[in-house]
Image (tube, rainbow, N blue to C red; front, side, top):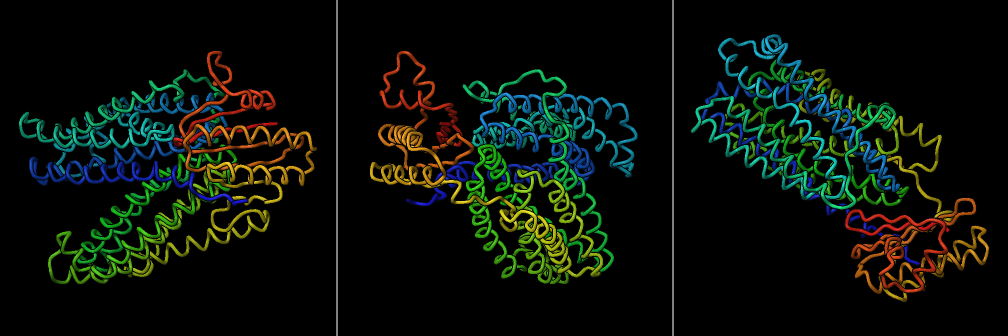
Amino acid sequence: MQKRNAKLVNKAFNQYLWASILTVAATQVANIVDAIIVGHLVGEEGLAAVNLSKPLLQAFFAVTCLYVASSTILAGMSMGKGDRMTADRLFSFSLEFSLLLGLLFTASGLLFFGRISSLLCQSETLRPMSEAFMRVTLISATPQLLMLTLNQFVTVDGEPKRVSRAVIIGNVFNILLDIVFIRYCSMGIAGAAIATCVMYVVCIIMMLPHFRRKGTLRLHLTRPGDVELKKIFSIGLPLFFSTVLMSVQYVGNNYAASRFLGDDGLVALAVCIQLFAFSMIILTGTLRTIQPVGSILKGLDDDKGLLLLMKRGYAFMAVCFAVYTALLVLLPGQIGSLLGVQEGSGLEMVRKALPLFSLNIVMQALLCFLLPAFQLYGRNGLALLLSIAQTLLPMVFFLLMRGRWIGFFVGQVVTGLAILVWEIVLRHRDRRLCRFLLIPSCDDSKVLDMSLAPSSQALSEAIVSLKSFLSSNGIGAHAVNVAAVCAEEFVNNIIRHGNATAIDLAASVKGEVVNISIHDDGKAFNPVECVKSSDSRIGLGLTLANAFCKDIDYKYIFNQNMVTLKI
């Protein structure tokens, strides 16, 4: 018997990974290019006006963190369980809530526009430009929230590449329309805001065709009680706090650098923040891969698969951040010069800061990657502690250590120690929990979990292992034979007709019910619908296997067939 390997999990991870990273990278690059265009065509006052409006955009994004990310996690888990109705309700709730909030943001923003403007912009000189940009930003709240919602739900529904294409093309529209509206239409800074609004609409239009496909999420009018609001908001709260507290962190970091290190410290801090933002492309892209794949695996009760997924994510990040950290440690001066820091005391400060700040970047990634596992297993207290501590403690220690760059790393270490103490308590209560991720480990005597090559010999060996496992768990000879026949027929069909390169077979016993799950990466084939179809030419063996099973559930996710048999 071959123990389960990570081949199918890795294929699912890779399917989402590069599309997710490309989506984040496209947004980051477009924001930089957008700022360059505004700076050149409107002037530095226009750039400042856009920056003054950032808190509005941050507020919109922070609010979506409270319910969209958590709703997609719960929807993915429901899809893994085969409960499409709950997934549809979560999708519908998120869209309806985004529409409602968008309209509320616009109405209240325009109603109290004078107060918001005076709060965000203290300069009378910049206020006309700032207000022109803010007004359009408030009006575009609804398409922005709807775009962010569709982005995550289309991803969890199996089309991350569509999202990536939509974001890239939308940002291209944004950049081109910046030039058209500002230079040729003489719309000034308002033109930049309108171009951004058009980008949201283009992204929405490009994602909508996803829902024409059969078996995708469907929109229903939700009623009170259709979704568990408490569960949604409790899962989303850590990410919401983390997003909101980022603004506090920026203010505190700037204060500490200015007070203890002077202008050179502010310059070095700006370089560190830019490099941190660049590292977030890898981290955020990886997290956006773990979230949909992990939530579906959790819905399938596949703890082993989720553990393999997290290990794959950590391995990928370890390579990326090892290379990135090496560059920061070995080439700090060259990186500072590349970002525009001139030779002198400022560049010397950058040389001191980057090697130490790189430790903060690595520790941030290692700790932040724990968040999906905490959220998926309902460890909301740990997730909240991680989100708040990881955002605030690096700033606090940078301030307490009077501007020493190692303070950021110390803050991350203290966060890690706090998480470790909490985990020790939880693992003392439940010995099944693995270290750090706290994912329950399976008892090999209670769960059979193996991978097999698509060959007759591998199938024969797997069936022998299945029979031995069921017999050792008290299943009678007749039931063992029935289960073996069903599993053999389904797997044999995959080998002969599915063109699969990998097959996972798992079995467990709950009471008098034998559960068998079979996953493969072959062409899509629904054995239940095939048997029901009167004009289908299907073998007698598969028909009998369907008859023997108490229940058969079929899903096609990650470009993989997933069949669960209950006997």
